[in-house]
Length: 146
Image (cartoon, rainbow, N blue to C red):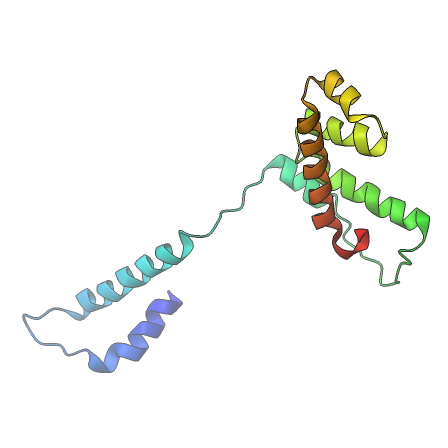
């Protein structure tokens, strides 16, 4: 509505009412219709937010109060908490076999061949799964993990 009012305010001095040429109501409708088209054209390229119960639960798990005190990220306990939190955040983004391939080869330090046999995957698939999860963790952690 604001865009329509703005367009009318800008163009009102150019509106000439002449019988047989159109009405003010028709002129106003044309502006409103064009603004609606512009709006839908702009928003058609945007991604819509998806969510539901799972997304709501993930959002509600984020603490509302952030500490203003700086945290020493060189402290081993703080780093472990940070990595554990990142692991918890990204886990739901991966299929169980992908997560298990990552977990067993990276956290449990098991041999890729053994994990591949146990999960009925190729060794290359295990390496790719590990790489995907690590890449996502790096994005989540940013500069902290480097």
